[in-house]
Picture 1 (cartoon, helix red, strand yellow):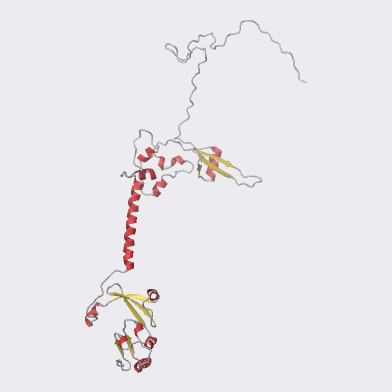
Picture 2: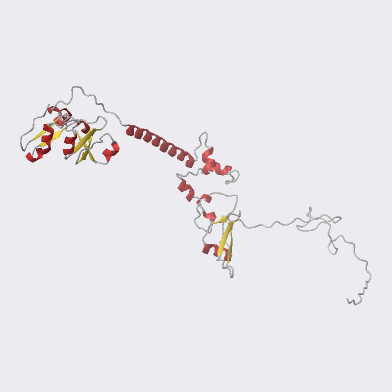
Length: 337
């Protein structure tokens, strides 16, 4: 069945165009040959088909604009792929994405002007990509929620059934600090909470680089050790070409990171005054009683500091006194040859 050709300077729309311009490999029908010159008469045709491969090859070669519509998961919406010639491979998503495309919503005001089908079988569905996206979003939300929940327990020193993780991992709670020996025996533990890892790290940074004991972690605490720095500086070498350097160690023998000017200052002038350091108290040695000597110490009625058994005017040693007689001795001159 051949379609009726329109008059000059007119146009027409043909739905299911493959019924009239079916693809074939035999002799080209005369009306298809006539389609090659309809532009001369100003005639424009719009052909609708389910696939461009169903249309005769001669017609496909004459197409000046091809628009391919793909409905989006049963929605009242389609993606329009547009090209200035026929797109033969409309089944390839990769090939379609390379073309110019846009979304187009169906004009609902035109629904009553035509009847598209007896029964509509298209249902709205979710694409596999959308389903995978929903699953990944749920998994990501679960992981983020778990990380937030675990982070709060980690940095807040929570006391749940497995609360040892917070105390042992971060030392954020005072209970864990007391167990580690940071609090003196008998001291009441206090809660120290950190909202995140950065806040916990800042608490260990000293306020002054040359004074590690000024870190906020020591505020209000009684540490078992007193931080101290021992620095040694060296001048540039002569023939070996060594550069000047300075190194600081803590009282525990660990290297302490400090700037070179501050290190050389400590090495030359010593540490700065530390009011938290307890003064050194030298222990006095107890007197040792000699064999046969009278016992020393204080007794009832004796003044403080008196030696028991000692009488004024007498020697207190235990060695026998020499007899009161003159002693003479002479050492002759000696020489060595």
